[in-house]
Amino acid sequence: MKVRYKRAFFVKNSNFFILFCMAKKKTVVVEEEEQGADEGSLSGRLGEFGSAVMQIADEKGISKERVLEVVEAALAAAYKKDYGKKGQVIHAKFDEVQKSANFFLVKEVVDETTREFVEETEGEEGEEVPEVTETDEERLPRFNSERDMLLEEAKKLKKDAALGDMMELPLPPYDEFGRVAAQTAKQVIIQRIREAERESMFDEYKEKEGQVVNGTVQRIEGRNVFVDLGKSVGVLFPSEQIEGENYRMGQHVKVYLVRVESDTKGPGLLLSRTHPEMVRHLFSLEVPEIFTGTVEIKAVAREAGSRTKIAVFSAEEGVDPIGSCVGQKGTRVQTIIDALGGEKIDIIEWNENAEKFISAALSPAKVMSVALHEDEKRAVVTVPDDQLSLAIGKRGQNVRLAAKLTGWKIDVAGGAKPEVTEEAAEETPALGEEATE
Image (cartoon, rainbow, N blue to C red; front, side):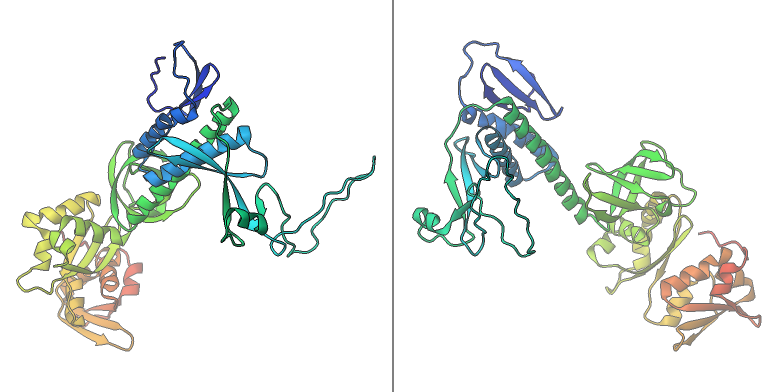
């Protein structure tokens, strides 16, 4: 018999083989074309069965142990469908070496303290047997001979049996399974493989949470952008998109993986292009000194799509933290700027001295003096009159980012003129254009 499907397994059923095409998720019945076909039992086909599922699992990145659980669950479901009883718990054990399976009936060891024993009584003709209703919330579950075993009986099989133990009783092997049982096994495999795939993807992306990942724009629905990350798809909500940035189908983008949530349809991936930590991670990818810890990013202040300020520091002598981030002829920082869609980046050196740090944070403006008010954590900065608009920035952006970066409230004054606070700067129209780098 010639079969074109590689990812398949066979279940013997009279003169037919049931072929499961897992990739297409459908069942195809193929008539036996060769009279001298192998008349082996299901056990003889388990090698192909296990290999087929293993191949699918390898493609989906599922562990070998989880695959064996799927195989055993499918075999147990098929056995119970044809030869088991309702209420029974059947377990299958698959032997990888012998390519065979053994089946067991699982029963829990119980006694009068863990189960309620009710005698079955028959009513007279035409008289209904009253139903037993549970009035007590703490009522014990009823004894079921299909899944429960008395302690006395268990000790006959196992001397050290105790309450709560699970006894496995061997079941007789059978060679043939019907189509319904085979279909049941197929559904179990599909469901379990999907569950294992979702768990595998969740664990994989959970490890990448808080990192920048590469993706491709898969589709755009309204203002939501769905990005294909390889094994799963994340969503980029409008609030997480850079203002004015346009996306197109098939576009390659770098996104920050903010959060990974478990979902019935797969891991829910929340992406961002505006998160401040995206800048930090991009620098760690592009600058080896940051990746190794020689240079440290102390603080990040960002207004996505417009400007970012980062404060860097190095404790090692002879290492220029700003030069390391900029790179030769600005190649390193330019790569990051391109990844952020042309966003401007100011790199300043972090300093323990608050006055020097605040002065550097207001760059490119030149600072004359800084007066600190420790109790209010407020700083009054004096700049030359011709540097006032530069220090404040367009719509107060420069002083606002400096305040976020340093953690100080900053008031800017120019010479003898009245002070212009950070709060007032946010409400002030464009006072001047920022200096270009």
